[in-house]
Image 1 (cartoon, one colour):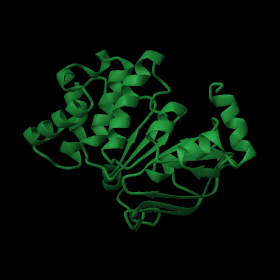
Image 2 (cartoon, helix red, strand yellow; image 1 turned 90 degrees about the vertical axis):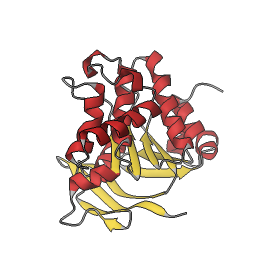
Image 3 (cartoon, one colour; image 1 turned 60 degrees about the vertical axis):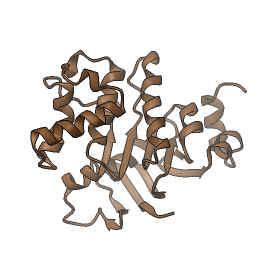
Image 4 (cartoon, helix red, strand yellow; image 1 turned 120 degrees about the horizontal axis):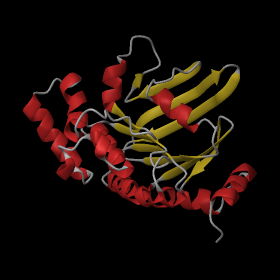
Length: 246
């Protein structure tokens, strides 16, 4: 397997508090990696560093063979290759569904209006939202907004998709529709890193689960190994609090 992402000795602090402490992680093409851990363990900061929404204090991130933590990296071009879906959707409320999805295609990819709309409708169809293309984004349910946010990233044809707890802001009945879309993406071979508290999704969709605690990767491995027979005591304690009783 070919690595798409290599993170080496990554460190990040905020106000003197260490959030990432010498993190090493390699992600391979077509792999779905789920990152689990308690709030404040560094999971979201790690994703934000991969997308250069935060700059690490030290260490390196290599994406598709390029050191993206070196000077002179074009952030907008990078973010077209690394899609990111946030907890809070980040849609433009004053635009339609179609307008949200075509915006980056027009601005970054420089596609014509007709080309952008054709691609956007394909992406919306993939997440079950094509019939809502002309609705205002502010009229959608939370689950619908998140599916549009996924389409907005997919339409750029990224090499890597990052999901930062994409269901945490949703009502419980809407969680399933978003997880179903993500599971389908994983099955198609999309390379994905997913920060999640949804252990059922991690068990079914991930090729590998990574457990983080206090800014460090404590252990990683196949879902069955991590969820059923973790090696480290800290992992066992976290799962005991998180997983339903057997």
